[in-house]
Length: 154
Image (cartoon, rainbow, N blue to C red):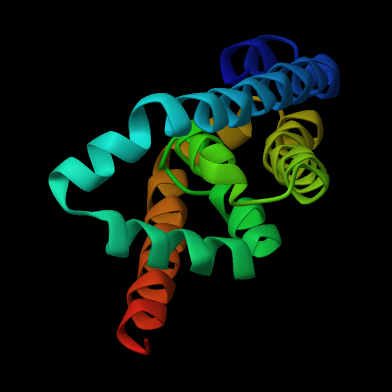
């Protein structure tokens, strides 16, 4: 999306829309794959590695804060499919919660970038190159800190 928006800033919202649609379809497929493979393969692997208790604890926390976790996940450097698969595991996150949160999270990410390119054009590229990794790192640290804190409090 960025190279296309860089070349044609006035079409940035169109490129973002295509990304939102594709990403949301990918998230839905990830959810379905997570759901199907957890029962078929995942649960056996988890118990074989001895991770059952840890996974169930983490998924319980994910369930409690699914909406905010999915919204925040859209801004982390962690691939969104990780959250999609986990949401589908044993139906950790209800479909009715997952799809709107995934859609809104992806919209926020892609339309934020589109807005920057639309209004600032190629000038924003240097700013994004300089600060995007730092911003994503801050969000990832906050997110991982939140997970570590919630695990420690249990």
